[in-house]
Structure formats: structure tokens, C-alpha cells
Image (cartoon, rainbow, N blue to C red):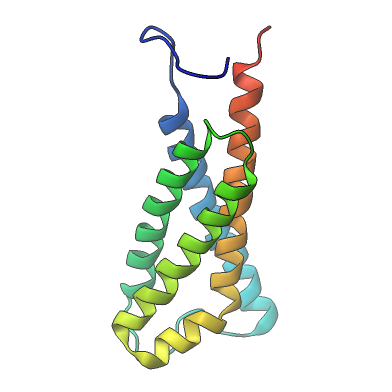
Length: 138
């Protein structure tokens, strides 16, 4: 089933990408909490707005949703996974940069941001394989 699809054929890519992006957000929140407990480290440096991280997470989620949905038609998931990881990482770092140079540097070195980017890559790969299994003729 490669190539163009007919108008009557269901195209669940954007809906599946939305669900996997929400799952990414939940996993990122859970893993971030475990890292915070294990490392005894606060994910957000003091003096930063309470809304900075949720807004950055929302923007990263939109970027991940778009990359995930578009990657389902690719021949392989690896390039899209790299793009997703890079875009999530850059969204967090740039959002930190808007709050100041101190947060930009903190976000660039943060294990929370690296884990969010890695989970974004896993999300794209899992969605790609899931869509392939769905499209397989039965």
C-alpha cells in the first residue's frame, strides 16, 4: 500500500500521531519525575516562570505531532526520528532562551530535555511501525 491513497481509504495518521504525542507528553512527565527524584534536581531552575515548561512542552508536542504524522509515509523512520528529536530539543532550548541566557544554557545541558528528545525519537519510530502493521494486508 505504498504511494497515493484513494479518497475513500481511511487515513488515521494524524489521529494516531495525536495519541502518540499525548503518550509522549505523559511519558516525558513520568520519566522527568523519576530523574528529578533520582538526581535530587529540580527540572526548572528557580526564578523561572511556572508557565515556561508547560508552554515549551506544548510547543514541542505540536512539533512532534507534525513530524510524527508526516513520517508515517516515509520509507524508514530513522530520518524522521532524528528530526523529531532535534525539533523537540531545539524547542525546549529556544523556549529557555526566551526566558534568558541562564535558562538557555541550563536547558541545553538538562537531562530532562535530552530525555524528552530521546522519547520523541522513540515516539516517531513506534508510530511508524504501528502504522505499517495497521496497513499490512490481512
